[in-house]
Image: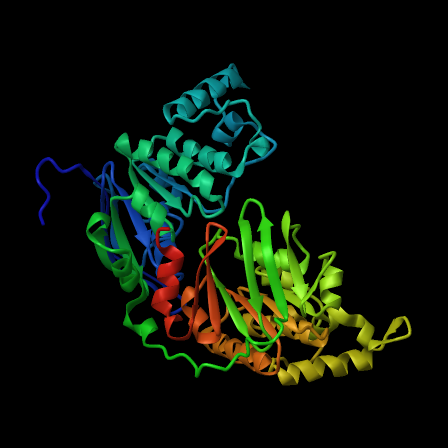
Amino acid sequence: MEPTTSSPAIIADVRGLTKHYAGVHALTDADLTIRAGEVRALLGRNGAGKSTVIRLLSGVENADSGTVRIDGEELGDGGVRRSVELGVQTVHQELSLVPQLSIAENMFLGVWPRSAGRIDYAAMRRETQAVLDDLGLRMNADSLVGDLPLAEQQLVEIARAVRRSPRLLILDEPTSALAAGEVAIVLDTVRRIAETGVAVIYVSHRLDEIRQVASSATVMRDGRVIDTVELTEVTTEHVVALMIGDAVRSVERPEPRRVARDVTPLLTVTGLSVPPKVDDVSFDVYPGEVLGIAGLMGAGRTEILRAISGFAQASAGEVSIDGKRVSAVTPSAMKKLGVGMTPEDRKNTGIVPMLGVDENITIANYGAVRTGTTINWGRLRGAAEQIINKLSIATARADTPIVNLSGGNQQKAVIGRWLHAGSRILLLDEPTRGVDVQAKEEIYGLVRELADQGASVVFVSGELEELPLVCDRVIVLRHGRIADEMTGDRLTTDSVIAAAMTTD
């Protein structure tokens, strides 16, 4: 439909945008038009192309082909400086504030106002307070950012962008780290900004909040813009179908495995609360079962695993192993009880980069490879080689520095660490993040094989479509609580994604 003469001005006009990375089609022939005062949601699964669009609009990278016009002027290859000159401001998912500085100092970071050769703190505070007041934010410009709750820090990031008078404001997952009660404050601020005529691109996986703040949504899949829809005219199921497409839906699940649930659960979690992310969560995991935990970023998935393994302090709740309550949930106690956890951030907290594959595998149980108080290197290497062979870890030598392995083989070594430690309960946090398709399939097979041997596995993944491929049962978290549980015929890609993203 052609716009009428009274339609708001086009602020962002993207035509035929294409970008490749080392042969990967990150974005192909993308078109996008956003008008003044419009809040446009940008939706898609991980890897759909959303981040590439943001980088190109922000000038962080240049497109291989296609054009970006902001308020009628072409961005070209001018980079970030040109993008900012044209009025594009981006608030990224990770905060970039300095906690030790005030709101005013963060607002003017790197562009200090000066008077008589000195920083004009009075002007800085005055202008900052004016921006905060205009946005209806009850904050003091002199407050230290580090003293603010996370939601207010996010608002400072947004206010800093608004101070620069943007024509286009891009918000990348602005509420992903916030508790449910804090989200409304951010959404209200975004609506206020749009009412001043600023065009807003709002990236989020949370369909409930998107419907509160955005009028339209552009859905991406596999690097392409699939459709732009008015949110008042489509159901959540329709949006999810656009995001998934036929390719993912057609992937076949393995044959269901029989899990005995008339026995004592290997792991029982009762009334677990980890403020502010997790509230009164209870579930059982049976011997030989792979339990998936689905949920969007910020739903509390990682916090649950960390609390079970003793790396995070729960404010309430109990953890039981083999039906017996654990009196003190600490990392050492849980390891002795057979609980092993692979962390979400494999690079920084999962591996010791310059140690060999053998040491990374045995590090959680050096006692098994000691002679007296001294490590027996022959025994260590032999134990590591058993795991390497069992998990088909591709490495030239057992003592090869683990940093030289592919992501998939690093991940298998981290899982192997807990097999060497004799773990019966494996808590896997994003075990396929950053690995290729073949490695993912190998990890799926490994997880199911371990379950076949009697282990209980809790499998957390932000790639919701993979959960039906590996799990026997999936619980879905929303706002830190269990909102749904799926097994059998209900456990499909469509149902998992819809349950995680839909409105309560």
